[in-house]
Length: 100
Image 1: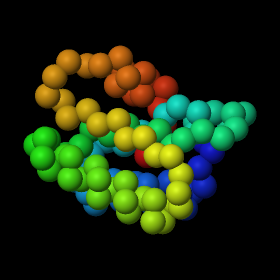
Image 2: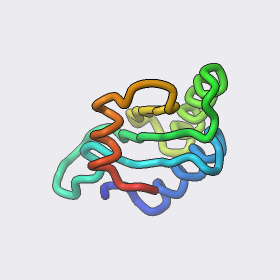
Image 3: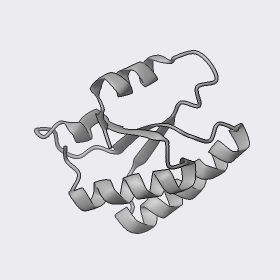
Image 4: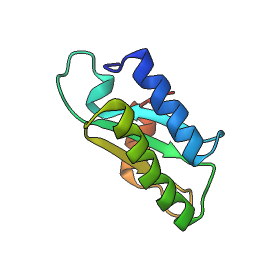
């Protein structure tokens, strides 16, 4: 994985802080490929919180917090609240991602 242990720790702490301690978190996309270069940080989360408003607020607050610590990097949060159909991006993220 092309994230340092410190970056992974910051990501995990931040997302659990805003989305709930029992949230499932995965890194997926180009950052899991050690031979790739560049790319944004793609994160998949199944939050403990499921209300639309609280998940929206958590997303904004988490992105701001991550950017303050990690710097101005592109960060994509794919959030599966478990309230609807299983979108292909959810399936892809869970199948190819690395759980943190």
